[in-house]
Image (cartoon, rainbow, N blue to C red; front, top):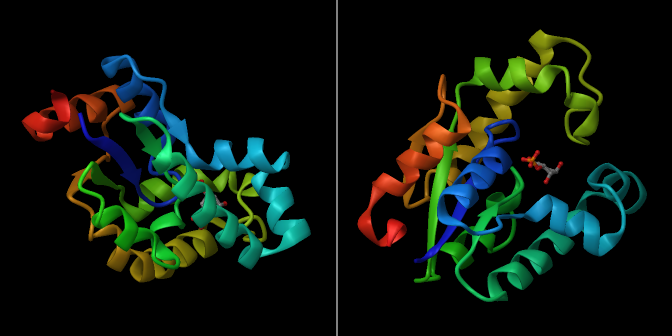
Length: 178
Ligand code: S3P
């Protein structure tokens, strides 16, 4: 089995899909944000507040490399920004043991999901209204789709639960399921 790397905007369900996929495959999934929090002994919000975004992105690239080097096979949920900085996406694309899957979610769905939990996410915490959040996501996603769309597969996730998405991932191609 190749490594399966889940890519997508905040709120696209990467972590939940990784858990469902892990259950189906009998593998404990990895969540890059959780891994960073454990290694740095701070929440993602604390890292952004205390060390800044540049420090976070450096650490994110460092720990991405570290988790990719762990013993295979792996299911990894990345952070929403991971593929969009430095050489991270090229690194993933050049790894023949890795399959990247973009979980594509509509802006309306992302806005609904993220509005109530925006305080937990440093990039969204200061946004006051749902309209402003919608506008922010629309612009941000426009910039990021360039990277997300370089994934090996794109799966539309709207109106599907994590287990349904995980089952679709297994059906995508035989090498992923074997
Ligand atoms: C970020 C997404 C977050 C986390 C950090 C930055 C981003 O991960 O890595 O807050 O730049 O989109 P999730 O997508 O898991 O929320």
